Length: 138
Image (cartoon, rainbow, N blue to C red; front, side, top):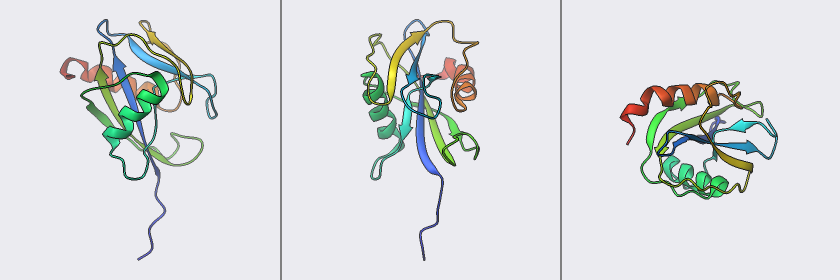
């Protein structure tokens, strides 16, 4: 049986620091170049979504994450202008407040006032969903 053509698999992460600020990156590449986004990226072959999430965060922000809490799966075929992708979104807390942009991130910063920020992709929905789950996050 031939392998079916399927959407790309990605991960995104909402990271809260002890002051409940969130970590956002400014995208270095298209699509949405120079726009704010949650850190994340594509899952590599042989990698779990949890490992992919931790790797992408480490590559883009230099932060090592511990426990991850599942926010949800985001699969709208139009969520990424490059083509159909599905993202498994996680939330995490960290005590680390120092971050360094790397890989696909031109910049990485903590934001206190993020309620009205415009975010790339469907990251506003992911962030809103994470905020509803926040009291239950580890």
